[in-house]
Amino acid sequence: MPRVEVGQKVLNENARIAGELRQRFHEAGTLCLNLISSPGSGKTSLLEQTLGRLPQDAKVAVLTGDIQTENDANRLRRFGFPVKQITTGGTCHLDARMIERHLQDWPLQELDVLFLENVGNLVCPSSYDLGEEAKIVLLSVTEGEDKPLKYPSIFFKSELMVMTKVDLLPYVPFQAETAIENARRVHPEMEVVKVSCTSGEGLETWMQWLEHRRKAALQTTAQPAI
Amino acid sequence: MPRVEVGQKVLNENARIAGELRQRFHEAGTLCLNLISSPGSGKTSLLEQTLGRLPQDAKVAVLTGDIQTENDANRLRRFGFPVKQITTGGTCHLDARMIERHLQDWPLQELDVLFLENVGNLVCPSSYDLGEEAKIVLLSVTEGEDKPLKYPSIFFKSELMVMTKVDLLPYVPFQAETAIENARRVHPEMEVVKVSCTSGEGLETWMQWLEHRRKAALQTTAQPAI
Image: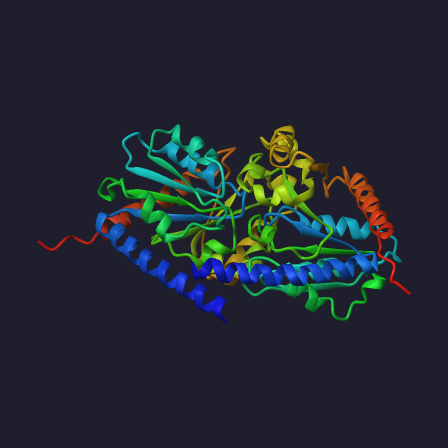
């Protein structure tokens, strides 16, 4: 089918650019993380809490994707770190070329951590490699515990599941352990952190995960041959 | 660009089949409704509450879409009405051909209302006409009030916005009126119903909307020429 062939060409080209990005992140020692979830699961809230907990001299930046509006970038800019909005205009995911284009005037050597906040979508972003070190999937306790089974691709490809809005657990029928079991049926090594951006619960654990991954990225930095 | 051309061909073919479906629904007096939302906004819960409130002799059926699992069909079958799962296997939306294929052994003359529960996705389903009489978008109060601005296409195309999980309003920062204003900035005629499938609030209003639309669909049924 021509549709499949063209789709494959698009994905091959995306993979080529993502490979170049990954190499650049690696050489610069930049930890690049790709945050993916349904709309409204709390990606921007988690980033707000994260940026608010970092020292002012942290070398961190965010590229945040949406179909329309600059809302998320406006929410995130007030923490003083570099933030750019990627407005996809209808495309349901970020792709590697969008990342490449928006990084043109950001020297990666000056970035320890780059967050990519994907378009709110649990399906399509899983097919597009952005050169990230790890994908992180967010699942809020107001969704169903069976989301990992219904949308297995993104849970399979994510290293960490951040369970969000756990302050609402008393008011919803969500069973956290069932959701974690489901995630590990799809991806047995899935790491899990439970957080609430309202109560602050779990955010220290998340920041520790981040710091651990940041140090690991710096240690594996490829040294340029002289 | 070949991708755009092929994409357009796919959409044209979808529109052709959707047009045929619409004609068949019209002739049979079947009200077809296409429910769209983020994953976890409560489409299946709303359908459970709806089916549970209908008389046992109501002529109602559901086609429910997911990437994987029969979970939703299993939840909905216990009400005794015909239900089929459409497992898309990776495709991020239902398309008209899937609907046509799954309707093959359901005589439309025996259906007053057909619910299509789309794949959980606020982006891609908005591009695929399924021959429905109306699209209904669900927005839960645990998401952000700016979703209509960030995902305008589906809010523009939907006749009704069902605001779900309103029992959680005391525990979340969500401003219902702001969300409604945002929806009406995108679509000034948007009808709105607020519901909670936990407390039952608003479900009578939703059932009245449904009954009103069902009667309207029967009245406009095209009579076959004899």
